[in-house]
Structures are given as C-alpha cells and as structure tokens.
Image (cartoon, rainbow, N blue to C red; front, side, top):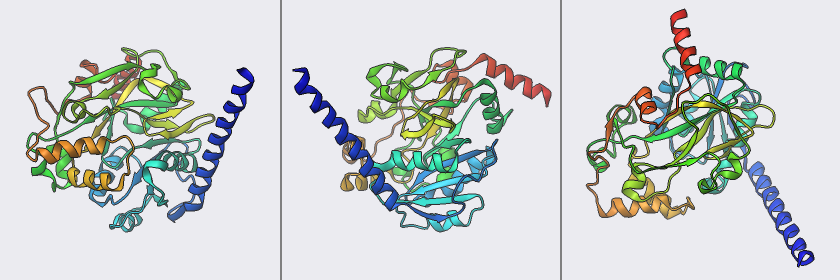
Length: 355
C-alpha cells in the first residue's frame, strides 16, 4: 500500500506546484504598471498603504483624508480593471503608484496584494486595507501610526492583528444606498458585537491554520489573541465571515504579507489588536452583490446570502436593541472585542506626558 500511495502523493504535489507556477506566469504576464514609482519609495521608517481597487472613485476622497491623517504619504493601488474615473483621480494625487491586472479578482487577489507588498514595501511597514475599511488603533492621537510602528519595531513585533467591526446606520439599508462616503463615515455609527464566534489563534476550525501556524504571538496581551467570525452579518445573513486580519506588517526576511485576505505569514504578532471599521453596506451594497453574483466573482457565496435576504426584504435594517453606537477603542477593549497591552498603554501615557 505504501508504494502505491507514494507516487500518487508525489503527483499531487507536482500538480499543485505546476498549478502555482502557471498562475504566477499568468499573473506576471497580465501585470501593468500604470503610474508612479516602480518600486519602494517610502523612507525606512514610513508606512506604505496597499489597497486593491476596482471602480473605487466613490471612496477616494474620504479614504485619502483618513489615511493621510494617520501620516501615510505613500499609497499603492492595485487596480483590477476600473471603468470609472478611479485611475485618473489617483494619478492626480502625489505619493501614489498604480499597478493593474484584469485577471479574475476572486482567483488572484492574494497574489495582487502579496506582490504589491513585496515590490513596494520590502524592508518597510505596509498597511493593507480595502477601500471600505478604516484602520484605527489605541494611541492614534498620542503617538500616531509612525509611533505605533516604531514601538513595534523596538519590541521585535513584525505585525499587528486587527478585528473588523461592521458599521451600519439605524435606518433601512435601501434608504442610504446612495449616501456619499464621507457622510457614511459619520452616519454609519452603529455596530453589533453579538453573534460573534471566537477561536484560539491556532485552532484548525478557523480554516486559516496553515497560515497562522507559521506565526508567533508575543506575550503581554490582556488576553490571548483570538480569531473571530460572524457578527451582524452572521446574525442577519447567516454569513460565516472572518473578522480577523493582519493588516499592518513589516515585510522583512521570511515575511509574506497579503498571502491570504485575512493572514500574513512568518510574522511575530504584537500582543494588542487594532480595529478595522468596515463599511460593507455603503455604496449600494445590493447592486454590488447583484453584480458579484452575476459575475460569479466570489467562491464563498457570501454575496448570494446577502442578495437573497435583501431581495426579499427591501426595508431591511441591521439595527437591533443589541446594537452599540460609536464605541471607541477603550470600550471595545473592555468588551473583549479588542485586546490591550499594558506595556503599550504605558508607552502611550509616557509619550503623552513627554509632549
């Protein structure tokens, strides 16, 4: 039995390797550089933002405003075939670069992100976010993003985990479908921490253990790092959506950023977590899900689950009595959604007193 099994195992590995090589060749042949520097252009102590985009003009003004307020001066966009004025508007902005591939997003998104991170943030910090995500963290006002990464570097941390918090309005989603994004960021002030499932970081149940088991977690958190699923999208649409990401990564030796939408590998994780406020239901989410389902762009089927519920309930609101309004970082730490580190908190206090 052993002899007959071995060739089969070898052939499976060989087919997988050939498949990866073919995918890589397809990707590289599709790749275009549209704008800006062709490689690393951030200073060693600066953070490079990396975002996938397709027809993202709706988000750009507020997106740039927020991330510029964090001190980010270098933006790399990986475009997947925008047909609106996204590319033209990014070109007008200093400190930007654009790569493009029109290959299917659902099949190649990991390659898009990881390639951009390696090309533009080699031996630098990168922040990988989606256009509808707003990154936040303890100490934003006191030490800023550069202060956070400097602190992490001195402690030997090479990544920070973050939890996605779905933000929504109190009114029905149909009533806010055309709301401008800057107003969305003000009006989508509610969230829901119920219906969240929590797993150990190394649990096989997450489906991410291949990636997560390649990482190390530093000691010092108020509780162990956990991988979260669900939230309001599980409660309303029965989605099994992962809320945990590794967005802030130092792309040093042995580190691969963006190899999965929710994971980096080869990193030492800080014991505290950041926050990604997520605005999935902005920008006419029903129309976007209809398009996604029609294109069969996403294999996991979450777009179909949302479409089924929203199509049958046009007056749907995500609000319930369990909703919380505009919780800050400290509140989310107190409720266990985010994790604090006393050492980092002391560092923030010391920095504030020093000022």
